[in-house]
Image (cartoon, rainbow, N blue to C red):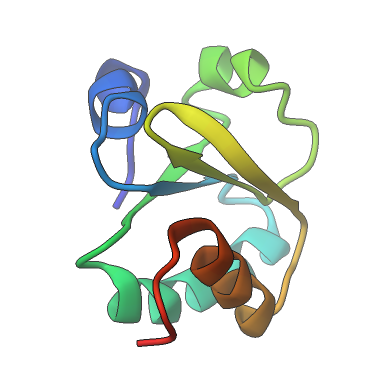
Amino acid sequence: MNIFKGSFNKEVLESDQPVIVKFCSDWSGSCHIMGLILKRISAVYKKHIKFYCLDIDQNKALKESFGIKVVPTIIIFNKGEIIDVILGITSEKEIESRIIKITGLCDI
């Protein structure tokens, strides 16, 4: 699901659930690959974690606010705090292991 500046605070920073935000761009092939990986992961963990995509070209203020220099950049938030950052393409297994470590969820 796409997210924009107007709803970012409420949906991400004020969320009671952990949130994964993929900072991406339509022109990046790597972003499309990570989008497919996150789609598979979100199907498994969507009851426990919110998943969002933020287009850096449409949300330049948020891009600058979080110092995004590489796309895709995945930031995992918990209770408004950044708890992990993943740069570039990462395997599905690696992302799942970070989710399990951060959230305490077992492999579902």
